[in-house]
Each structure stands twice: as C-alpha cells, then as structure tokens.
Length: 380
Image 1: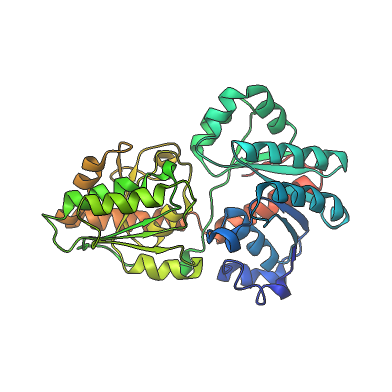
Image 2: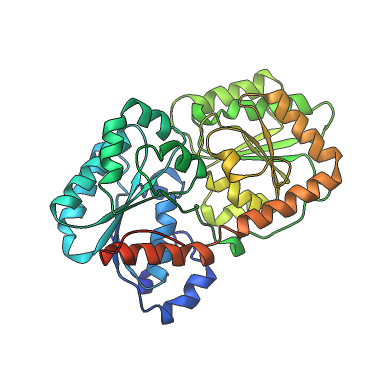
C-alpha cells in the first residue's frame, strides 16, 4: 500500500499517531523522496504496532511517498506480497528499507533483497531481535553476505551493534523512536503496587514470572494488582499464565484485558506505577521506552539489549532472567524508597526524550536520501 500525507487522517485507525514535530515539518520538507518499507505491518492482525509502521507513518506525514509491505497475516502470503510489491511498485520508490529478524523472517529479507538487487534499487537493512546474534553464529556466511549487500545497515540496539559488527563493519545505531509528547509524564514519588506488563503472550517473554512476582508480594502489599496487556501468540503461554495465577491464588489480582490499541496505551501507563519486563530474549522493547516516557518505575530482566537500553539504578532496575524473587525484591525497593522511585522516574523520562521522533526522524530522512543518491550511508 502507499501512504501519503493527505491520507493520514483517513488511515488514523490503522496507523500510529504521528508526532507534532513531524506535522509541523510537512510544509517545509524539501528533501522528501520515495521509499519502500519492507517489514511486518501486522497491527490489524495482532494488535501490536511494529517499528516499521511508525516509521512509515512519520515519513508519510513528513511528505515522503511511502510504499509498504506487508500486512498479510499468513507467512507464505506475506512473503509473496513482499516480493510482488517490490516488483510491481518498482517505478515508485528510489530506495528501500528492509527489516531483518532471525529465523524464517531472515530468509524473507534475503529474498526481498535479492529482488531489490535484480531491479537495481539500493536498500538499507534494519536489524531487530535479541535472537539475531545466535542465528548469525549458526549461519555466519549467510548473515555476512546479506549485511554486506546493503548500502547501509542500522540497528536500534547497541547490543546488536556489538554482537554483529563481526559480520559487517560500520553498523549504524538508530534507536527505536517514540512520540514522547503522546505519553503524559507523572513522577512516581510514592508508587502504589499497581503493576503493568505489556507484551505478547509467548514463552520467550516469560509472563508467568510476572504472576509469581504478584504472589510473592501479596502478603506484604494487600493492594497489589497486575495488568497483563498483550495478544496471544498461540503457543499455550497465555493458558499457562492463567493457570499459574489460579494455582498461586492471585487470579483476582491479575487482569488480562488482551491486546490494547496503541492509542490507548498512554492511558494504561498512566493508571499504573511499576512496569515489569520479564522477557528471556530481548533487544530494544518499545513498550519499555513508552513506559519510561510516562515516568513509570521500570524493572526488567537483564537480557540481550536491555542493559544497552536502560541504566541500572539510574532509570530502571535490572534483575537476572526468570528471577521472580529478585524482581519482587526490586519492587519492594521502589515501594519502600521514595528517593529511588523519584530518581528512576525522572531518569526514565530523560532516557525516553532522547528517543523522540523530533530527533530521530531527520536522521532517517538524511540516511534514506543519501542512499537514494548513491552516497555512502552514514550518520553524524
């Protein structure tokens, strides 16, 4: 599909709201070009917005002619749609940006880039996912070949820059952006035991750990409540989480509202004080940045790219993976130490502000224009 600035209002139900700064830049943007974005545009199917969807919306609002692919929920159909769009719309874009994940999604990126090379279109790769370094270790030649075929390679994570620089030099750190103004900030000086978990229900995100945290806290904090927001990925993890809540006697303390529209997330963040990220594999989770933008006290497992995203004791607290006791202790620290809670809240907001679209969108535009013009990709 193609997104243009004058179509943004009509597609408001499908796309994330664009930042005010982007709206202000539309009239004076003389460098807007034509771009194809290849990634998972699956909000309508999963309820979760991908980073590529936000990039598409922001570029379109800034005056770019944006072609996107794909929103097909089934994997084979999605790959077919990607390749068909690359070929069919080849006269409508000068440069492409392709998301790269591990597993089967890596092969989709390979196929997409092969076709882009065949039709002579330069492309930028964006590396995602905490499992990508392990995948690269198993397939070093394929990863090296794909990364070095691109005009530029970006990644939102210092973790991936460090882990994957052996496969290609000059990786570009380009953080996942947010529209910080859309997330109302409140300092959590005296946080209540209102806990929030936002992720898809899948085993790699370990949601059962959050339920175990509530069970550990319920006797000391009778008012403790946990809201678990996210779609069911269908691997049985949601059922296991529900069963764990019943087994541990906290089923009345845990709410499962399912997937929540991105436009409603700021409201959900505002109703809670402490954000739990229990994942076993991660890179740069946008939901953590969004929680920080609202000033929530963030407590996360120290896995993958998370230690590159937050600073322990400065804007978040980090614990070992699958350590429910350690996470419970961290919640107690935040609850019982107002100075720490305030420090984490203020630090979190500052961290999030450094990732605002007003800072990062111009970097994307400069890189896309440089690659389209045949200049070497790079950023200040």
